[in-house]
Length: 175
Image (cartoon, rainbow, N blue to C red):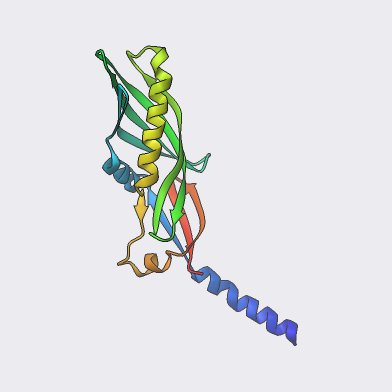
């Protein structure tokens, strides 16, 4: 008798737990608009200024990460000036207090700046890494909306974040 009741309870609870989760898909276009709004970012340190602009988002499905390629410009005292590209990738994290998603642990995968001697490339990359990390970790790529009941209720527990078919798929659980 107890086993039958337990089996019934498990059967009833299984669809209930499925119904109490919320999946949100973000297209590359939606996330690209957020990235565009964050840029350009500029950082000055000592005698060097670095500006990162015009990001192009790529949802790297094989790595389950967000990746972006952006233009980078560096200037230094003495008229030294160069521009090029930077490739950055990072993971997505969720902050339930604010209902916001952030790109965390961004890493520069590659960077090349024309017209800048190799001896300065490392310093510029360090400054670019710090600039990009700070900007992306403090500005959300998406915040759940309080006027959407499902999104408001979903601001509790993150079940999973994955990249699927060029979309960022986020599953949140109500409990």
